[in-house]
Image (tube, rainbow, N blue to C red; front, side, top):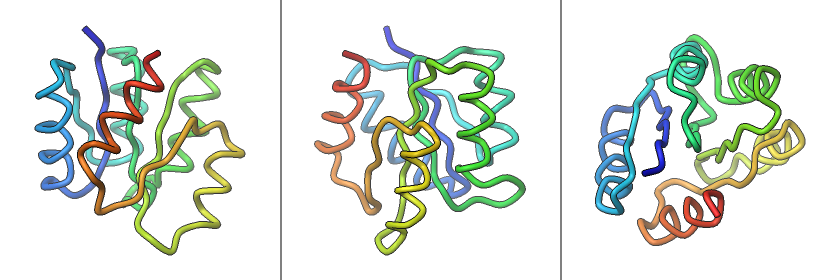
Length: 118
């Protein structure tokens, strides 16, 4: 069973993703900011990280770079609101594997995760 770390400062977004991913039988871990994301990644070595870009304490791009530094093979999918195209491009350059736009369609989330998990 794949383990997925969902990182978002909005509890309702984590809950929505947890529901969508849980229905597929995947184990879901949660973090509410970039600092927690790095700690959770080191502790649990998830198969995939779904990370929001805009968060307090440490944003998603900074956390993405830190995770990829520790594990160059880390699979991270960024979640962004519309209008953050330049940030998404920066995320891809920093090693993000894909991105989904919020508000997201459950099918898109599932397809993206399946693609990344192979």
